[in-house]
Amino acid sequence: MPEEAGFSIDCAFPGGNIVLERSEGADVFVHQDLRDTAGDWFYWCFRVRGAQGRTLRFHFTKSNVIGVRGPAVSLDAGHSWQWLGTDGVDGQSFTYAFGADAENVRFSFGMPYQESNLRAFTQRHRGAAGLIVEPHCTSRKGRQVERLRAGCLDRAPAHRVLLGCRHHCCEMMASYAVEGIMEQVLSDTPEGNWLREYVEFLVLPFADKDGVEDGDQGKNREPRDHGRDYAGTSLYPETGALRDYVPVWSEDRLRAALDLHCPAIRGPHNEVIYLVGSQEQIVWREQSRFSQILEAVQQGPLRHSAKDNLPFGQAWNKAKNYSKGKGMKSWAQELPGVKLASGIELPYANAAGGEVNQETARLFGHDLARALRAYLGG
Ligand SMILES: [Zn+2]
Image 1 (cartoon, rainbow, N blue to C red):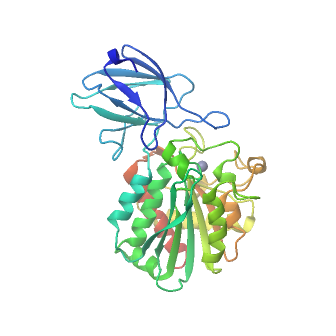
Image 2 (cartoon, rainbow, N blue to C red):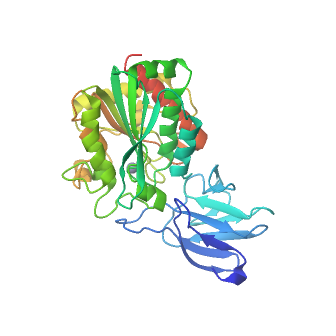
Image 3 (tube, protein in one colour):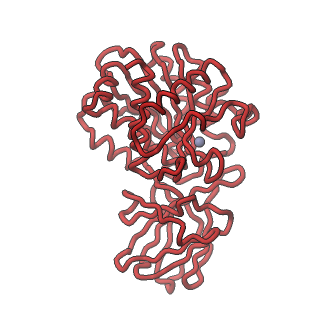
């Protein structure tokens, strides 16, 4: 960015992603960095410094990558985020009036959840009975990849549950739901007390750790998407280590495996919470049963309806979509003892009219924990 512009734009922080093309006065031209993505995708996250008191217009030049509640903005270095809304959005561009003291502002397609968020969560619960953070593997780029075990840890539990997230690294809103499940497991509530008595959870919060921290899209990554890495020999340490560890850990007590995702930007199946239907009828029946339980026990502002689930064979959920490999849910449904295996899609911004944000996504996680308790017989 030329000095005379007086402000700077960059993405040199965890989760950052932008290509700055040029600026002309108050107009800034940028696009998302696709890196090794096959086709187009929409994740971006950048920082503007030194623009306090100015009004700038940001133009995305490649495709429309602004979500249904506008961009998300953070004034505290990515800790808390709010949707800007669509008033300042015009097609592929948005306008932002920087406050007089807004020296450092981040914008993103969503509300990024990084390793630092997970660390803050585990710090908040440090020393809590029922939570262990342990090393899972080392990523391709040398990062430590965490896994969490939570719930009933001091003896053999009645049930085990596997949770996966960020197989597509850009799908950050799902991470807040996973955090919400964990919060509920650790809570002094009837649900938490029951889950800690009878259930052990294994959580892989970042199935693509490098992508999360580097700010990649991850979806449709070449040569292989992490969400298709459960067939043949795994390319990635995170998925390979999970395939090795889970059968040993489960001791045939693994009952449910949920892989949390976010869908695409807008339109059908992208603005509702839904389960991705299995091709196995026996699993699909369990998914439907779980959905009905979730409908019955949910208390949060984001509402799930079983009618929104996507049966196998409809829309994108077709055999040809799985031709490049196998996802976590398809692998997990074949493990001994597993009854429920499902992908769950949580929209980035709008879930059947409910605003998805850091707090409501966590509350949806609370509802998932309630539903798991009821599903497992509590
Ligand atoms: Zn996904």
